[in-house]
Amino acid sequence: MAVRLMSVAACLVASLAGVPAAFAGSAPDYVPLRVVTYNVKSPLGAPGSSDALAAGAFMTTQDVDGTGPNTGLSPDIVCFQEIEQSAASNLVNFRNTYLPGYAIYTAAGDGFNFNATLVRPGITFISHSGLNVGGPRQVGKTRLRVPGTLKDVIVYNAHFKSGSDSSSRTQRTNNATTSGFNVEFELQQNPGANVIFAGDLNSDNNVDGTITPLFFTSVNPSIPSGILNLPVESLAGAANPNVLAYATFPSSGGRLDYICLDTQLAAFFDANSDGGFSVSELNSMGFVYYSPDDAGRRSNGNATATNSTSDHRPVVFDVRLPRDPNAPYFEPSDLNQNGSVDIEDLAQWENGFALTAPPTPSPAPDLDGDRNVDGEDRLQLRSRVRSGELADVAGM
Image (cartoon, rainbow, N blue to C red; front, top):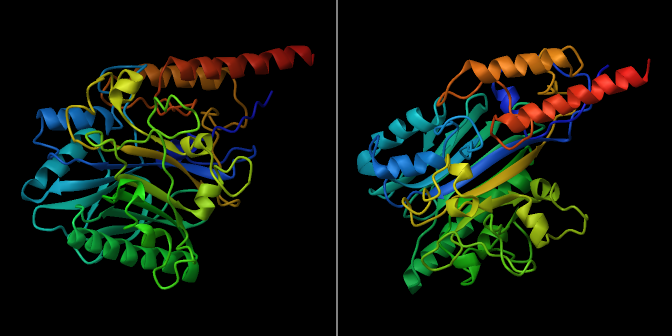
């Protein structure tokens, strides 16, 4: 009995692990990609420091506290801002400890700090450059190809000028204008890629209008650049379901940190196809992570992790990249790749689950898409195997 079910959120993890061959079922029309942006503000810190331990609790692929139910955010791409220039080695040490194997791509800073983009192994590097947007720091621009996708994806990592004085607002507007032109060119003139624009843009939900040029070209403000302003809530949400609660900078209650998608990527979340985004549709894209909201489940059980490091909070987006219909598709539950999900797959999963102790990730795949390999995955696989057995018996 061949039981076929599309497992979406685990597809990228499986493909990046180098799993070969294709599954004979129908593939979903997208490939998931988790992108996180985070202004570390205080340095990541030397290995073993309180700052490094706190940030590493959530910004990691490692199961630091032992098998389930806790996990890290397990990002595919991390956009860091304010990496301390005088202690850049701490970034390498952090990568080695919490995001092993990730590539690091940096852009020129202001002499004090800089932006760094970290990319999961298995994603193909195309190019990287620093985009000069008129100071104080370059925007990192990294072009990548995720396995199984239709297009390259260009990830911008930005840290715009802060401040409310006239000079700072003008510089921030210039940052947004140059960035908007670059995004518009990539999407309109050279449409061979999707675009994700992330970072600390230092405008509280754009109430001052300084980052409007990022979303619309400054030559003709009625023409969109092709990138969208998409606020998402924290996990706790708001008391009023029609109002967003999205503070990424808790000291002021403001939203300074953004992940922006192009219209094609955002359209995956437009459930009613009306061209707009409700609160629930926005929240289906991602969340602002505050560790007390989930009792530290996504920070390896450390409920104070986001309180004790930066004064910013990470923003997490589960982006969906258009799938190449001709690319091989691997069904993560079919571990032995024989075209069916059965007792042999369950045995293989359980053996893999028992094989490796934390912090080394389990070789058993994440089957329920929560980026955590635990008993819930076993229950899902057991249920599928049991359903297949019952169907076989009924058909006899």
